[in-house]
Image (cartoon, rainbow over all chains, first blue to last red; front, side):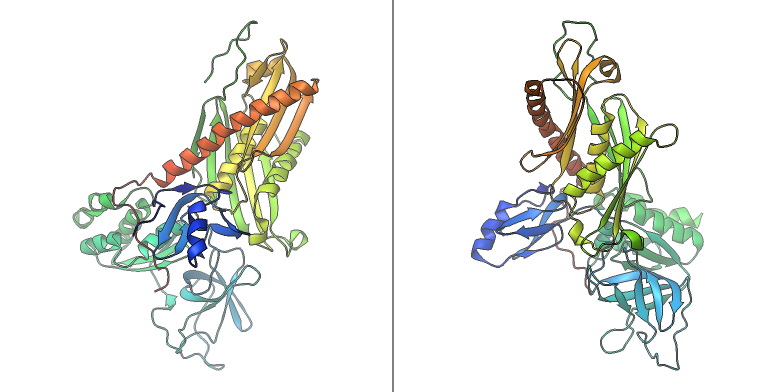
Length: 235
Length: 237
């Protein structure tokens, strides 16, 4: 699609993006993170490459480590405490999130889930906005757990939000390359947190180091980095 | 680095010293930068939005906290003055309304002070906020200029050049229209000199804004590949 914005245009905070304003004159435009509307102008509030998705969505792909919760996100949380009917879960945002004990599959008032402080859960953000504390659930709207719930064993580490989003792409080439080397289980949260489980501790560390190296390298070097992971670990 | 000898009769220095920056040298904060202007080096880190104490909690916006640590010794009153100066500039630039009931904390550690440390600290704070992903209304840049004993204007002075100064000025400008965000002066001067120096500093700040842009571009292009990320990312499964 012919558009005047190349995907490598860098915008700085305060910069007016006139190309979006021109487009908005003829059709509806969706402004994503990093862009805001000031009367009739579109101004960037963060620094980074300006990205575009057909037909009319724009956002700034800035580097960020701190997660700001949004509804519908899949996140990895660390249970901090039990407080009556809720668990307090740390998802890396400014406020601690809460999850009701009923928000688990087959949970009833008498049948509480077996969750303790220190457990890791993969949950979906039910409610989040700037003014409220985020709420999580471990079930979908049908009451089934799907892939959500407690994650046991394995290794937990943090990364930037950008890396998390890269890994969450469909058929992420990095994860496919790693699958060819070693079998593993992985859970990636939009909040820049990753849980990894492989057959042994050495393999888990090797895999987590390869994933973290993606922060600095790009896809073409994936095979070089992960290529002989399997053989190296056999020794 | 500019080599300007202190003997009389030299051409006034109207160029900024060489600037360098390295992003995210620290791993535990949300954004950090090691920034240098000539030999003056500073590390700035931001944390935020994070939880805030109830006494500083505001429902309208976030609470901005700034800490400056000198290279040696405990922070004294002059460090507190620097902190409040930097905090004032940051409060103008940051979009506090985005994250109510939270705190944004900026920590600045002086590694080496070889002239114009105030300007260096302000610039480092701006870069740290940019790489930390905090939303801002605009970016800002500070420039220091002195009038030496001969009445010459020296931009971005070195430690040696500030030894015998008649007056010193630190200005901070925004990136939108070059409005003044900060004015700090010391010493005696005429208003005509003040106006000249303000113009000199404003045109120098354009170089700093370009430096910010180039380094952000370089940081995002560090994984540069011809097949770079043009596709959309779906974060919902």
